[in-house]
Picture 1 (cartoon, rainbow, N blue to C red):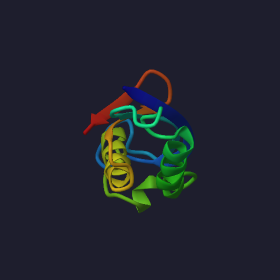
Picture 2 (picture 1 turned 120 degrees about the vertical axis):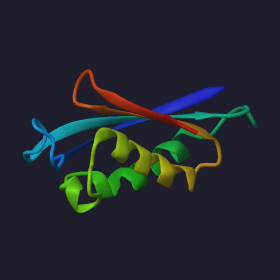
Picture 3 (picture 1 turned 135 degrees about the horizontal axis):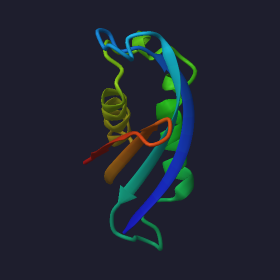
Picture 4 (picture 1 turned 45 degrees about the vertical axis):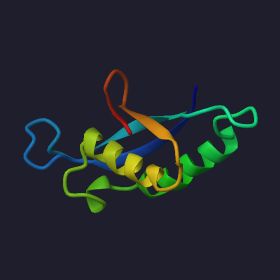
Amino acid sequence: MKVGVREVIDSGHFLPGHSRCGKPHGHTYRIELEAEGPVTNGMVIDFAELKTALREVIRPFDHVMLNDLMPFPSCENIAAEIHRRLRERVPLVLTLRMWEGEGKYAEIRG
């Protein structure tokens, strides 16, 4: 079974060497986290536990210049780093979908 939660952050970044995104700009990122596993004692995981893990992991990415955290903060690289940090905290199969504004996203599962 799968369950999920969603949070939003706002951050700035630029993509070095990119013709359009090479200038500093910002985005609202919507992060959807899905956890998959067996139902045990009526739940896959408590929503509160999943939401707390997501909020704590994304806090360092909120209202910052993402280039201060990683050399090439593309949506794909940000999603991969958040997913990596969540996997250390949540022992289930996780799918993370990170929306960069409207209509664009990166997704990672594992």
